[in-house]
Amino acid sequence: MLAELGIDTDRWTGIDIAQALTHDGITRGWTWPRTESMTSPLRLVAFRLGQLDWSDTSPTERKVRGRQHTGESASDTAYRLVRARRSVVAAANRVQAPPSSAAHRQALRARFAADRAARKQVMTGMVAAVSVDDHEVGRP
Image (cartoon, rainbow, N blue to C red; front, top):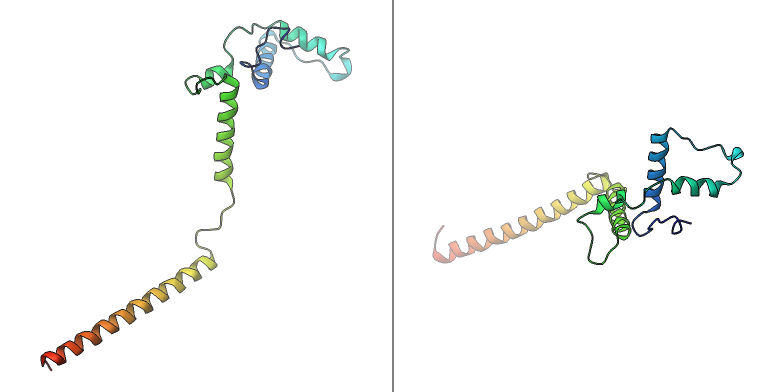
C-alpha cells in the first residue's frame, strides 16, 4: 500500500510516517475515529496517506544529513544511529557496584597492608646491609 501511494520506504520510516499523519491531523483539526465506528480502517489510512506530499525530505533524512556512510540509505543510517545510542544508554544504565563497598575497602586495606609489609621488609634489609657495610669500614 505504501509503494502504491508513492511513499519511498527507504526514505520514510514508520516513525516518520506516523509523525507526518499526526502533524497533518493536528493541522487540519482531524482526529482518528473510534475503532467501533470504523468500517474499513485500511481505506481510511490509505485516504489519509494519500492526502500528504511524500516528495519532501523526511524527518529522518533531516536528522541524519551528514552522518551517512557511503551507499547507506537514510533509514539505515537512522537505525544505525539508534542502535549506537541505545548501546550507550544501556552501558550508562548498567547496574554497577558502589565505588566503596565494604568488600572493596577490605580488599584495598589488605593490599595496602601487604605493600607496607613488603616495603618494611625491604627497608629492614637495606638497614641491615648498611650496618654491615659500616662495620666493614671500621665505623662504630
